[in-house]
Image (cartoon, rainbow, N blue to C red; front, side, top):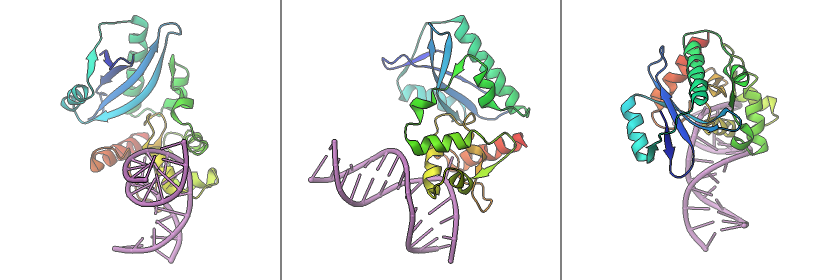
Length: 196
DNA sequence: ACGCGCGTTCTAA
DNA sequence: TTAGAACGCGCGT
């Protein structure tokens, strides 16, 4: 699915993973020169109606461009996520690094603090969990809530595994913090379950 | 249940 | 642009 956002040449792609009951919506750039997809943002949606409403609200317009390489990369990405959601222990960050997909994290996390948080997050492997406190210890900071805020502003959930961060006392903690708290937390639980 | 701490974002000059 | 207030996926008590 190819849309454009305003005059900016950003595209979107969405699909429903086979083994999940939510939709994955992705903003991305495709570079014709480098033949690579850069992931900009991953958003979860409850259903397709919500996506269509979102598309209307954000004034995204359908584009007629169609590039086979781009399509292939996106299909591979979809297949990877399907494999992940089916319960295979996959380190999405490492796998994506082997594909023609870029994350451009330098542009997404600009402050020293958020860079440290992300670096620490990427060390947490599928099946493992950490805590906001532990991350703080690792980056030498006691700004636990601020660490949560970095996770909240994480544009690439799943890949940067904020869902593996729990509260120190074992409670699940929040996830994404955008729309529906219960629904979002359920996704966090679901992700932890399939990784176990 | 409350106060606190702290990076980031919002708001009002 | 700049200070300061408000905000949060938390922690300790």
